[in-house]
Image 1 (cartoon, one colour):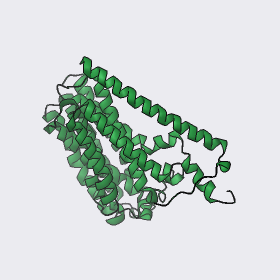
Image 2 (cartoon, chains in turn green, red):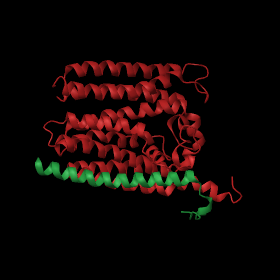
Image 3 (spheres, chains in turn red, green):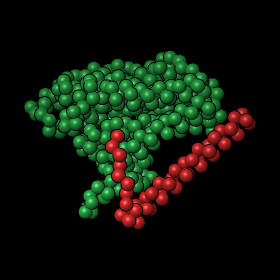
Image 4 (tube, chains in turn brown, cyan):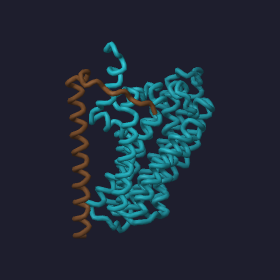
Length: 48
Length: 312
């Protein structure tokens, strides 16, 4: 696989920062949702 | 473009947004998978799942289908860029980097299989894992670019969801679950060959050996007609296996008859003087492609209605 060159931070536009921030928030929410899902599954299995 | 070019060209791909990753999951395909998986789960007798567990199991089927789609987009990024139908997908469009799409697909695949195994049972988890591996390795990497039978064998991957739903609910498979699998398995070739008839130029350009490209349009029309007859008969099978009742059987027979009539119209289009030309509009194939989607939704919707509302 080809190695991607590093991006010069000075070339990153506000829109790109916004996009990256949005992606990071989405990943955080996904991880939190996954944890919450397993918590709920455990509760349901305990009371079933 | 900036003077250094490279930085500007790569930058957007390295900053893909959440909606680009959602697009990697092939949401339209996912909707059909979710629906058929849900019906498989609801049709199963004496479900062992709590409603919440059942909802999570369906979510796992959806995520697994999307994950397999993401890996498919990673592998097919070269030919996706060549076809007008797929050129705007996230990787060829440059909004998601290929390695990110691959990682995304693998993470979701593992998460969906682990969750399915824990929330339902090992049989459902194993079947889910098998369907992902089959779609990625057998269909995408092995068959798709090598044989005109790609969609016949590879189509099995898309036929698994109702059987997975059934296994999630009961912990095992049965003849009825296999019948549900076969309905979609037989539906897949005429569905995709109808699409391939009016997208033959695209597939030829990308070097994908779809049936119209390899065997010609006339043979494709013939195969669509041949497959549509057993497909229509299999659509009625759930009633003979006691899963659904006579109301469903009658409706499925009508829907199947309309499908075969559509396939006959595709065959009759072959008599047109320009039928074998690549730029022929293929009106009957376009109609059949659209109807095939409606057919599958209606068929599984009727199964669910028959089971839930009429208590077959």
